[in-house]
Image 1 (cartoon, rainbow, N blue to C red):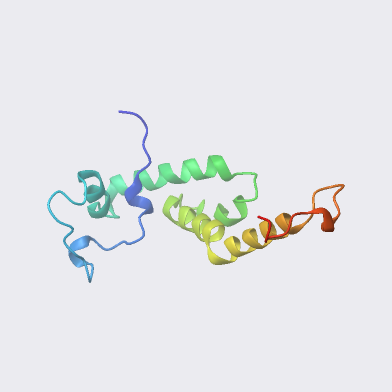
Image 2 (image 1 turned 90 degrees about the vertical axis):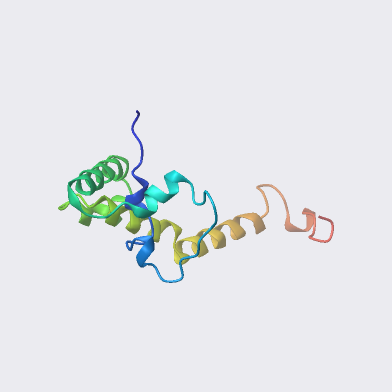
Length: 127
């Protein structure tokens, strides 16, 4: 068995399904066995601690010395992989970052290529 990402550590909710309000039965065979294990694995105990440290090691290896390190360095003291993952997800996939990225992309698209004059570009009606 190869190295795998412990998905249960990075799931959104900490509560187990039997304690989650509004939980709906998806029908026979749903969710899959793997999805059900991810949903039901507890966030506690020695196995969780070991997996959380493993997630931290992966994130540290990727982020250390780069721009993402500022967002995850505070999690190094306790090797908190879940906290580091959630911090990265919030920063890079949160509303403010995506809005900034879309605005930058729009500005790039609207700027004419080098050597072109804006009146030479096709208009939206032509496209």
